Image (cartoon, rainbow, N blue to C red):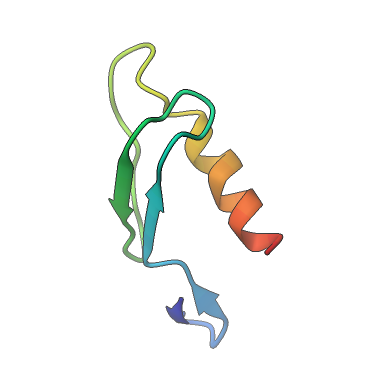
Length: 56
């Protein structure tokens, strides 16, 4: 994590292997990141992953 614009931490990269149907995923985050894709591509899992990381 890196410092965010408000002085808090900002998640900048997420790498996942075998989480709820996602076999191999890496996402680079910026100050604003949009998730787009077709049905069944795992978009709803990204907020779940972010919440899981915040619990660590």
